[in-house]
Length: 594
Image 1 (cartoon, helix red, strand yellow):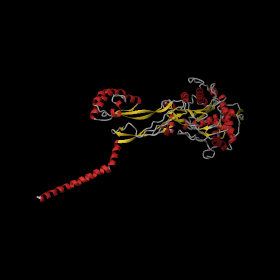
Image 2 (tube, helix red, strand yellow):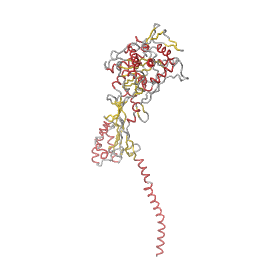
Image 3 (cartoon, one colour):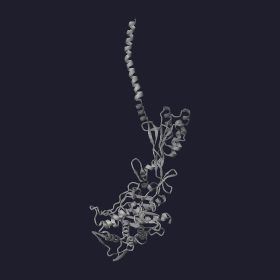
Image 4 (cartoon, helix red, strand yellow):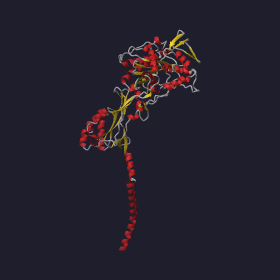
């Protein structure tokens, strides 16, 4: 009997041994999964069901100097609802009708749709119904107070997240200057000051709802975002509006391709207004590109001020220096230099009159006389003493490099280029670069770096202010700059810009009428006027540039650009109503205009 039981027990042991072995192996594997690989699989579970998301910091606002809000964030809400969150069926079904009516009223779709969704999802325990995406704050504020929703996330099941979009209340009025900053492009003030405006993002944990949506796990952020700082610009929206209206009206009148206006504070270099308008396919004008900052052009007679200042500084001539024009054509190498006005020769012209009447013959003749044998004396003074040829170093991106021919460039330099330079051909500058120097003419010689931002602000608290930035303390002597200002005033009182000799504000400046595309059969023109006002104590400098006006209507600098300058200057001074447009006849001045 014992032998028989021992035999049976042996057989049982032999049968159980493999089972025990398998059990041990399973136990080892379970231990491995729980202890060794458990962390890995828990990490995978979290990765695919729970993730950390960035919480965007609120981007700083942009304000004008006169307190107008130019750019700010608009919150957009995405809302879900968990029909299972409320514990009481009785309370839930008692309020479903009212909730469905409210959702239909504020979000859209009919009441029956919402009632069906709310009831069916509750019965089937289907969680997280999408209520709406990109809802405005007004809509969000209404639906969060609907029945059930007003109980919040835990008791009511309402879940939401906030995203923001950028709003520009003034639309196209300052569009290229304000600019854009996103993942793809950055330009203008938004791009230049992105590091200040954007702040520091926070962090929030979210759980995956389905293949598309994630919901916040908590009602709080794991890391709170730090909001960006506000910018206070030097732009004055009253100035901006005046400049915009004056330019767009002129562009339409002359059917021009594009144009720009910049206004600068004479004693600081801060920009008070900047308008850039280009023609669209439908013939309207919008802020398409920042022509003021990036577009090089040959300034023509606007550049003559630099030539005359050079001669004054080098004591080659003075305001009363006389030159006799003996013929209405001045032979210069293979070129024939002419003025718009025909003289009864011989005609004696003073240095002041040469600039005031924008005489090409006078300008080229004196430049040839003084610098033919040493063009370096002229060019080097422009670049080394006055400082032309360098970028201004704007924080806004896109500034073009000025171009000034160099006699050392044997490949491109030709002797005739000296005379061409003297009246603004062969040299290229942006409107902003030219204005910075006319601003220096006005203030006694200080070249300021143009700036757009006056301060950083946190809420109502100023945290940083910006002082004027000096690029060059003296571009020329005060004595000769005073003479130049006098001559620029004569341009308006006696010369090519007599048509803008306003009875309301004293203007000084220089006209420019430049040919462009002159190497083609379809010559176009660029009209410009650069100057400052009021003459006695200059407060503001300004440049107006209009590209490719319709030649059959007009293209002279005094008519196309000068009248815009006068209209803006008068309105800024507040001496005439904004609705008054002072129209100036240009016919009597055409013989003098360059």
